[in-house]
Length: 281
Length: 281
Image 1 (cartoon, rainbow over the protein chains, first blue to last red):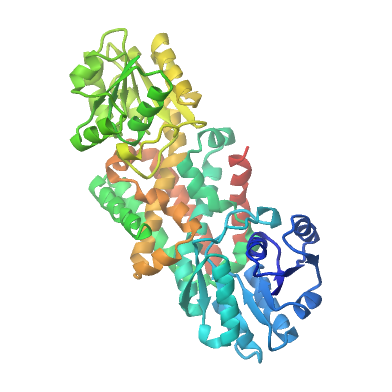
Image 2 (cartoon, rainbow over the protein chains, first blue to last red):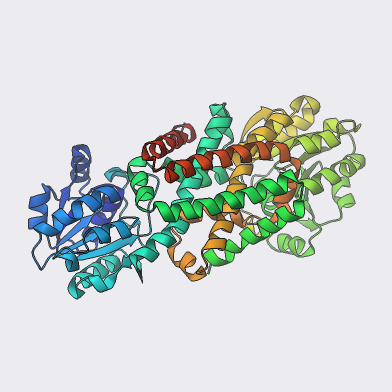
């Protein structure tokens, strides 16, 4: 199978490496607005050929969009305009309602499969790509009933090749759940970084003292605005709901500390500890 | 050197394992209120002997307190009452102002070295202990001028055996910095867990979708109240200051989202990205 990877960064690059290694991809066209990324991807053998969008789409069986969700939303109908009926298009974006809404009346809608691999790091670019990244992780396919059966099968096989287990849900449910499970973590992490940067003027002390706990909580704060602003924009209402709840929960800790109510504090912590059971199920 | 480890949990157990492996400890007495932990520690060869506090203190060159900070604060003067002038006492607690204040007039004050290894996990108990845990991490010694030179040397050698690099500061500075670098991360993480548990009723979905990002941000929320309530109690004012700033920072994200001010959102994220340069120095 020939594959066009639109966006040869962390996600597109990691998918390309694994699909090539596993034999699913016989040839990979790389498309990117960033020519440095394209060159790097070619040098790292992530892609076989640097290509234009038109050439890549024309010559591929599967087109993978692995670009920020605002660009994907803008590009998806252009790609669907270009394809023939045997071709399949999938994305890898962190929001889903926006992209599926934008093509709901497109004549080639059924060739598109809305896909979200639940993996990422705070790094970006083709040099951050790792072949086995997705192994053992969950991937979500949204609104499967709107995709043609053969297109769905193609993407399901891709997920299998990546070593991922599939979950099916509606685009609306996906965006609600990811607001909790992923998007709010980023806001928390950004705000924590800004808190420390604002109040802790001694940078050297941050560096010297930063424990593993701090590093892991603040890790996501390294993620770039180019990727995350579009996600928050597309999932604004869900994220705001969760953020309001999160501020309310933080205010409970504040209240307990202010009132020296250490029993309340203990209860809040014990409740949070329940996450252990859920995450380790 | 014979060592008494008071508290054979994650921290005390990990120190015992490493000091034994490196040859610094010739014999280890284990003391704990939890008899199951003591038995496990003996079975895992973390300690050589299950002991009473009195026997362990009497027969050791070095006494390590690796217990919750409220218990340490209550126990330290009892231990200092028991020791002879050649013995050294150190702690491993996450707050320092409280414990040094409580013994500031004790005749054996100079035998105590206030120590804080900047490492921990969300797990507890002797079975969580790992020998090489501390390697490459920072350890803080507070108020060194109040410790006798030979006691200080003993603890500096312990830090070296653990593979840690030392930072010296006052107990007050320590508690201020750790509020930023460690304590607030825990509150953030607890509040995030409570947010998700409150709003996301579908536990199965949390489990299935939880990405690496969520897991790393919420990891600390598994930490027990027995350890953390006393830390927040002893460092209440610093933690409250940082928490207020954190809520203020989160409200900026809320404001940007509510006003659809995505330029402001991008600026907030770009500012948070600066943490990358500081953490990777």
